[in-house]
Length: 443
Image 1 (cartoon, rainbow, N blue to C red):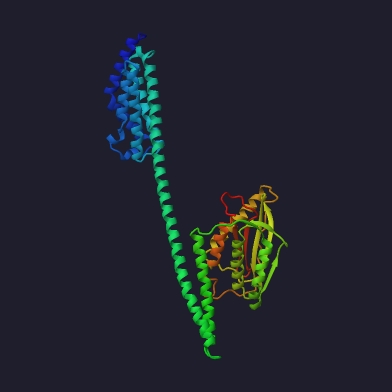
Image 2 (cartoon, rainbow, N blue to C red):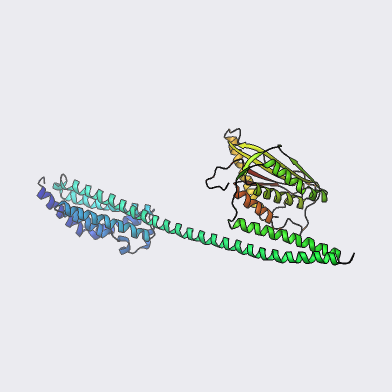
């Protein structure tokens, strides 16, 4: 069997034998798959669905064995690869996992190898020349089949992933458009209401001037206070709407944070004195930092006025300091009050702020365990409460001011921490970067 003509003739005969044994091979393959406990998807398929493109793969394999010249072999090989790729695509569509398809190819290879071994034992004269050629062709058949099937899976996964990404991007664009629309609606409504409140405010002031002594003055003053509170609320709503609509940008500049906070505290000290509360400040005389001084003042304003509003006895302490954490230079603004402390669930933002605070503490502890001497920092301290718990209906509002603070902190790459408990007062601490190195930051 050393003569090439005889070898080719034997390969043709073997290919014809495989063709006559086709159905037996396919049945043996299906039976092997059914006995595999790791393959369950095939049980839901009909025989035609199970066989899929494998008959075409075997046709191409037989044509390769019978091919006379290299061109015929290459054509058969390409047909074999195409059918294997189609098989992988259909297995994907039938709900197979990639591992299941590869295991099926392994069972097919074993069934084909068993058939060839049986044929080789019946034709011992073919063992030295013909059967090695056939076994190599079978190995190539199954390896290419696995590769092409896996390639089909990968292409389908990429297509599906790209489709999902496009859907998510579309949904995100739609959500952002809705957010902008909602913010614009808030802003327009608040703007209209503020105009109406201005008219009411003017009318109440006129009534107060025209009222006879002792007649209606109390009602007029109550109206003025209510109008003032409503005006403040609407202004906060407009600020929050602008922040949520992305219409605020950081204007980074160098400024003295100590002077800014100290001067603002002096401007609101009369409010504390009027309510018989103390307002103390503590921090270095100078603290040169980078940031947006207007937005930093808005953060301080909201936190300090909120602290004064919830404190009945005692007062508010404002601190500023600098620190280096894991090599990063920062500065901290803390507002402590002797109010009643937060009741659990009293504020919509409470859970998010407590979670952010816990993450900051965990990061500090991790840095300390790693041996970073600059990585540990103490949690923000609280003052002893001197105020009775707020009665029902006397809560701290809807947290609009704190929502504004949170948005401004995000805009300035700052973090907002909360330490509070009933009877322990409340401390808000804002951690600002000392400097900014962001492309495109407005200066």
